[in-house]
Image (cartoon, rainbow, N blue to C red; front, side, top):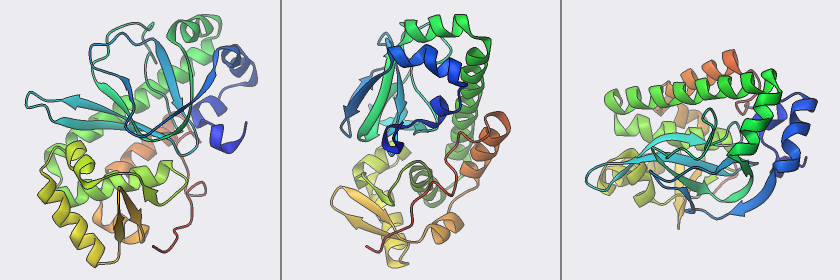
Amino acid sequence: MEEQFSNNLLQTLRPQDRKLLEPSLELVVFTSGMLLFEAGDDVEFVHFPCGSSLASFAVTLENGAPVETALIGREGAMGGIVSQGRLPAYARAVVRVGGPFLRMPCIRLEAAKERSAPLRNVFARYADCLLAQIFQSVACNAVHGIEARTAKWLLAALDRTNSPEVELTQEQLAGMLGVGRTYVSRVLRDLREAGVVATRRGRLVIQDPKALRATSCMCNEAVKQHFQEVLSGVYPSAQECPSVRSA
């Protein structure tokens, strides 16, 4: 499978298990901002981001503000992972960086898992990793400052994409962090003045990942470590990350 259409979670499956899924997998291309499903919707499809595509889960609070809970790239999947599908979603799923996704009906995934214990095991392990990411996000939002959380989100996007340019506006980033735009503008101004990031219309450019990591908390590293222990080789490695172009 070409790299731009590849998903690490699917690639880690045994060849015989991939063959169980391949007849049901459909390649689709989504644009940034597209809604995959809303909280309360019946989840009919499992979506596997490919290449540099990114999607996220967000919980909408009583004031209408969405708060990011998990970012999903080519290391994972979203929708019907451990359930039997068609159960109501708890969170909204949105495409953050548009591109190719592979998708399949939840009922087809369940049928394949019934035929293969190793396949069930891989998806159970991924569900554990996803839960760990959400746990870490809760702890991070409760304790760490906006500067560290902003850097953490940008690094998480860098790890999962093939470009240092993140298609994200300041308003979107503020919404995902659950803070006002002025706070994010201040953080980005400081990072820009330090030469760590550059801002362009509708996107952020990471110029100095090393300095950004120094600003970030260690939450991304904790999640990476758990992935490595539970699903070795699935989380994007440093070798997969692109070199940073000058802005």
